Length: 131
Image (cartoon, rainbow, N blue to C red; front, top):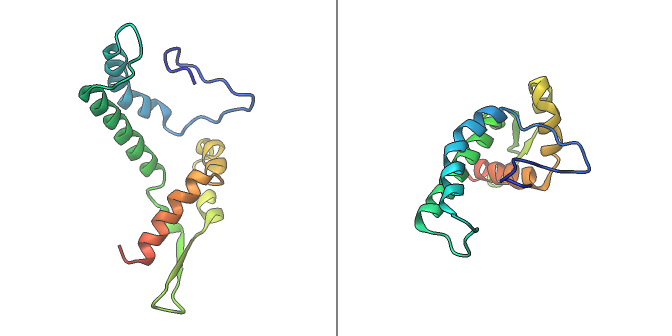
């Protein structure tokens, strides 16, 4: 990834992130301001303003990913055979059946990733613990 050239190089095809234009629009001002804060060279220490800009970019990304999985709970079932230790599972195939066709090239491999496993495990555990 070369952010300064807005370029991503890979030997494998890269599926577009759903709603990329919207995400890019929301992040572009933060990224521009962050890049202009560097001056001639990338800094070894970040300033308070740079940390705030990075936090803003992270918040935008988090909100964007949450929106992609906003209906996550609709695709979970909970085994309550032991009410003291409920176990919830994510119904991947049902979820994929309802995804927009243009989002599938990204979503399908993403939900097979370790990142999504951690995300779903966290959401399922919260549900099982009544949070």
